[in-house]
Length: 201
Image (tube, rainbow, N blue to C red; front, top):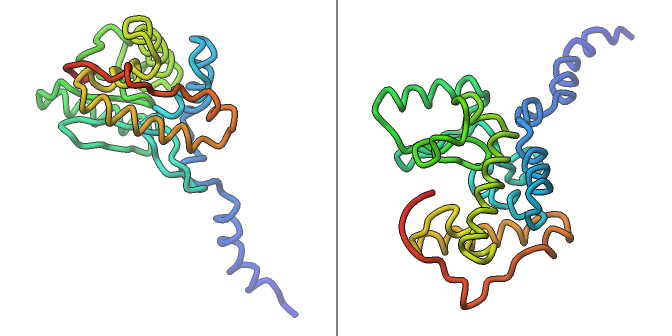
């Protein structure tokens, strides 16, 4: 029996199945960078990863939301791109249009509120640089606000309602973390840790 015609039909299918999903083909390294930054800044394990899922989460092949580095938020709209080059082009287009408030990368650092965070726009999209800055900023907020729960709320906004809603989303993301040790590290909110007031990062 000649199996070549059938093989020619099956070969493209087999090759397609062998390829990793698009997200895995260019994962960008958000989670690895975030975990490294958590260790370096001695953050509660899994906290920054949960924030990354809330900030730039993109559903992967397993259905889990994972932080995605080529993510932008501007004028209330989120953009997720397949490559860094596409993300860079979009930011430059927005800046050329006069848009100043642009969040970028794994942890969605605001370029206007953190003008000294990165040496270049390219660096802002580096998962390592983005995660390192976010981790340092979160630790600074904890030192100023007194608790990790306050720090998480103020990372997003010092406006009570917005910061509190964000904090709750992070708590839920952390509770859903696959590692029991990550869930165990979850800071518990208390009545004394309500966020205070104004402004996105």
